[in-house]
Length: 248
Ligand code: ADE
Image (cartoon, rainbow, N blue to C red):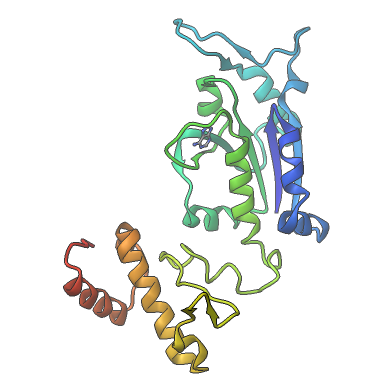
């Protein structure tokens, strides 16, 4: 997976990319991240990348020219890969979108600062717009790291465990079942007996039911789109009889 990131703050990416799984993916050549400072393409004496908005009002707007020049000089015109603009106005980023984007081996991410982008960047340069949630950050750098992290986990071999990403919360459209490790008893709180039973079919059934219960309690909205078997639906219906306030 190869990312070209366009930002005014390339330095904020480096420590995160130099740690843990991202770093290992870079060392194993499963991940390549090239950071480009948009300011390098600002042509005026002060390397200006923002300006006041036409029509007045507060805040500054990212100028189109340095952003277009940066992206086109690195990726060509038109760019040879999807160009994703990180913006609170974008499509909400989900595991499903992560899985779709992971099919590309090359993506460009544009991170904004200031109040926003000149609309022509959105209209004529970006192919996608992504938001990581309904809140406004000071820039697109953290969102770009979030997207790169979620996609890196999906690159085959990037997680030590080959099944690592398949059991994740959200991978199946459900929240994940609870996990336990040693000791069997901690401060009087015991690991559920079924997990110690060695009965793999029972464990799988318990985990599925826990995932369904947890999703029903915390995120019933997810059950509308999750892939459910007839047995799952029967279980959910039986849970709802016990707790009728959960609407699916
Ligand atoms: N830039 C600022 N806030 C953002 C958000 N929530 N998602 C994506 N990009 C952003």
